[in-house]
Amino acid sequence: MDSSCNNLHVVIISSPGMGHLIPALVLANRLAATHDVRVTVLIVTTAVSPPESKLLKLPLHRELVEIIELPPVDISHLVGPTTQVVTQLCLMTREAVPFIRSAVAAMDRRPGALIADLFSTETFPIAAEFNIPKYVYIPTTAWFTALIVYSPVLDQEINSQYVDQPQHLRIPGCKPVRPEDVVDPMLDRTDQQYSEYIRMGKEIPLFDGILVNSWEDLEPITLQAFRENEALGSIVKVPVYPIGPLRRPIEPAGPENSSDLICWLDRQPNESVIFVSFGSGGMLSKEQITELAWGLELSRQRFVWVVRPPTKDRVDDAFFNKSDGYNDCTPDYLPEGFLTRAHDLGFLVPMWAQQVEILNHPSVGGFLSHCGWNSILESITSGVPMIAWPLYSEQRLNAAFLTEELGVAVRPEVLPTKQVVGRGEIQTLGRTVMQDKAGQAMRDKVKQLKISATNGLKHGGASHKSMSEVLSKIVHAKYNVDEN
Image 1: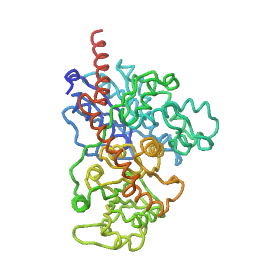
Image 2: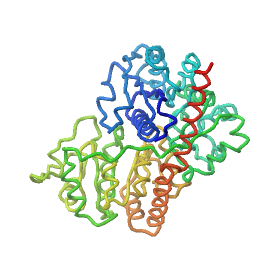
Image 3: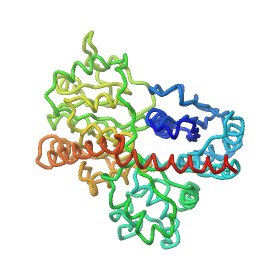
Image 4: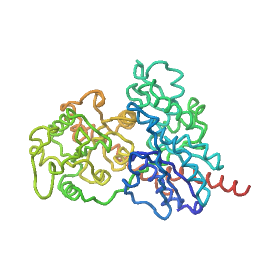
């Protein structure tokens, strides 16, 4: 615990969505449990979906962490059927600004700082109004941070669509990026989400500091570029603080399938199982699911597959492994007879599984992932190499980072969002990670990163020091305000 922070109170603003709320709550828990900071998390909610906190069960430091769900916002009059996700998130947070201001004003003790997530950058005037420091929390890589803050420069330098560029994009502090690997908002410069993205890139440097969910040993070149590169330094004049890796803790096994699954994993050899999961939003086409099933079967590698059907219908639990029997009533999006043939080779789970628990199991030796940063951190800190299968958002950029910068993953030759990845390539990817020398090299590298991640978060480690520096500045600013 950091005794200098005993009376410190900070506010974290989370935009809607599990992928945004989880990093906010994990940061809140870290501040409370490690630095003894009181944290209030303000969650932007909408009228069309249930409050996110009702969907999430994380072990929080309840004495110091308070969650406030803001009144729901209605953006139905501002969006249409083609409005993209980033635009919707920005509109939601924009509409919630009055609720955020009111919530801060109603607090019994003025917070020492405001920490906004990536889609809440328009809240920085609230910090000025209450005369408190403001920080932005980007719960992903320094690579992504460099891209977004440099995007206003690219916007001026490049007139056509980024994906039409014949050359790789050059971002200070990063390896050149293939145009097709840019983040979703950069795919269409005529769409509103591109304008929102450029706006965020301009607003991030207006904060007093930038927190990133990364660590020094993971991205030394990019982090150093933020400190020394002239091009980046002319844009970002505030410090960038690597405070990660912050990730979900291992949760107790859940009731559905979990005990059967863990028993099955316990019977497998060490590092022999590929875990296949595309996250809560990962939907594949029927054709791609069929090819994935064939690829896993042909690879002859053991696997655990969290299966989501190609529609939004619920998966019938009767299709999958159950302790009270086995049913080969194969759903039509899986190859005929697949469940029978794969019964001894793999374990299929409908819809959802305890990802952190599975990745930390000794028998798991590979992770076929959609490359959301939460999932990547969970894989790296479990010492598990990856097959990168990006689907949306910044996941293509993450896949490039994993394969070309870190060397802890392989990926298909084609983007899975553009073309169906064939069973032959899936078979090869699986065998590469699990059997080849290249896979062993990736496994060795990711285990080194796991150790560095653990050391960075320890008291006195680089990430701990980085967070402590931020808190010291907040305490100092609070002391000066109180004195005046």
